[in-house]
Length: 399
Length: 131
Image 1 (spheres, one colour):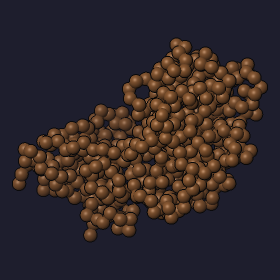
Image 2: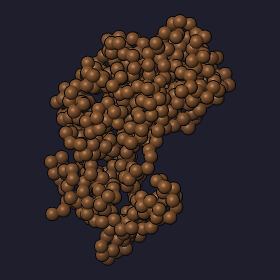
Image 3: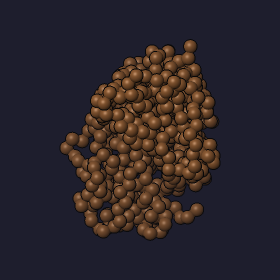
Image 4: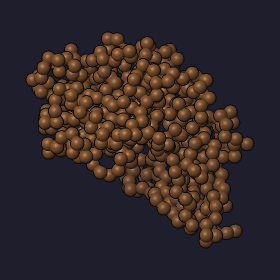
């Protein structure tokens, strides 16, 4: 293993509605916050990874530099669906690991408040004459005619498939996962929604794609997150306070799907997540039983269930029992999504893969306030971008 | 009968409508739609194979919110057809959780999508309960 890499500074904006701030404002706030948190300036940064999916084709990294500091460093504008933030961070980590720079910056930002269905939200009209188009020679749009393109529907099928394979799932079980995350969110002042919801409220809310009702879906919102990473050698030159608050990146992994039957029919979010987790545990020499908290990609309540298993927080096939044991509640054996998760904290797509790391770092630094997981030393952050890409980071408190 | 055209090119119409897949000559991986190469073994030779008409419901959702113009609720699912996974709607069943069940036996069915300005009828497919 090469030398350690550290998160020196990290920041997450309030998630929610920011009608008075544009994408660059939010990204600037996250970047300046992360730099201040780490006690460095843009002058110290050697490389930037930046992600934004919905803001158009203009390069977010350069637009951001024009507001916070133009120093001529390389910018890598990345896109990897919901794993975009984690991918930007991987860019900075790889550059530091390769020895090209000793200090890197990663940022992800999105303006999504008020957005509806992000995929499958609109469908083109049928053409006046049927003309085969595309790889499947389709004569008309297929969404709704051959399955669904909507994310709530795709992830509903993923959770239901797990239930079909291992048993024990029900509408109520999935709703109870959402109940947990909404309960957790009440302690997170940066969450979009901080409202406890009863099981009855969750199950009785608007159905989006069975079994996912509206509060069981990730909340579209505005937000940004940024992180400054440094080499071990650089950290050693910094102050005792900077070293004390630095968080070790014990594993940084990004995977895609290895070919399997059916993976091009319904996205298989399981194999690549399991592969990422396995690689991360090996890199960190840490097992799932060592984790004090986990932030995983609960884009839908049905997704959280399968990721208990994919991240090996339970035995294979044991996700339902794991949840029913109370383990993923904040007072349980392996607290999951104490931030409130994507269902209540919110999911500004490109920010999510850094915001989940901010949450873990906050606990490892003992700065979690009312929602602090006492004595947290090791945490894992996981993100899935449909397509697919999976990012897993394992973080450790400075010794 | 008016001219007909399948909704997708892997639906074959005629007396006995059925689906066809492209099967990798080297490793047997199956795909729907035009290929550049096999994602599993990188082979570039494929043969067209007929997919059986009957299968089992592997997973589903009942979509209640969709794009304007898509009738809801409808059942979207994955059907395991003798080892080949097919994405499709489950049709001719009440779209409720007590009527649509995991593992239910299903059979391919086809139906008109609409007629275009040239008088050609597009034919789509779905899977309906057996018996």
